[in-house]
Image 1 (cartoon, rainbow, N blue to C red):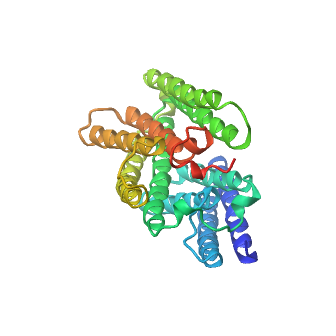
Image 2 (image 1 turned 60 degrees about the horizontal axis):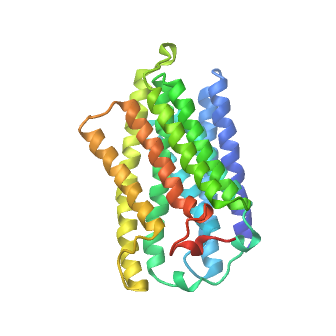
Amino acid sequence: MSELQLAMTNTAGLTSVMSFWVFVGSNISKRWRELMLKVALAVMVVGFVALTVAIVTRGIDAGRFPLANLYESLLWFAWATMGGYLLMQKLYSIQHLGWLASLTAATMFLYGSWLPASQHEITPLVPALVSYWRQIHVPPLICSYAMFFISGLSGLVQLWQSGRLRALAFAVGALVFAISAIGLGTFTSLDTFLLQGLFVGGSIAGLSAAWLSLNKISSGRVNQERAELYDEVGYRGIMIGFPLLTIGIITGGLWANHAWGNYWSWDPKESMALVTWLSYAAYIHLRIHRECSAEKLSLVTVAGMILTLLTYLGFNSLGFGGLHSYGRFK
């Protein structure tokens, strides 16, 4: 890793943490709120530019497209998350989502920094990744995952603004269980059955409890205008991410046929990508035909975010195996 790349990556990581705290501070201080929001956005822009330079520099240093292992994919995910938020902020002025977007990017930087040194180093590609399909297939997937995360985070904010605080607490609990399982699966040697049970059981229990709690409304907390705004932001994020996921799945099938001789093999990660695609297709159908309330759709976006997390990181950290197991580092 060159000094420039290291400096730019560290700058991006630090600015994501800084923007998180400035966004949080803007919600506390009414007097300095507008100024702090502008500062937080400016800091995030600096981080986005620094990360762009870091990724380009890594590609130049490696002499290849810089997306070949878990560490590099985390850099891309953080980049797409910051870029996606900045785009949505420009379109919708969604300051309340800024601290969550910054926290997501910072978490990915922290997760990546804890990976083994072999992940940080530039190494020759494994044979399965030596193909021009890699730069066609993987970037749309990573960018779709980032947009789905932004939509899921918007769903959480929508629950808050609509006064569904109990449902929000259960939904956050489901997300915490899922993230904890992936963290434990990455950095410990716990039994895979236990980790899978923690992820699946915690997610289902939390989301089910959230669904059953949607009728509990804290009327003093309701801001209908903002609730409608974040419902719209969640929808728009999915409308950006869904075509990208579709492209990723199609190009993945073409790459699979090129590499393994068949377009679809029902590999666990392929199957999970299809399940994720179907969940967002269901969301789009329900949203267009107005068959669910905005709060129920918000929970669907949170469920989709957890499915995205399972598709992206879960299958390599929770021991599901399959043809994509080269993504594991343990």
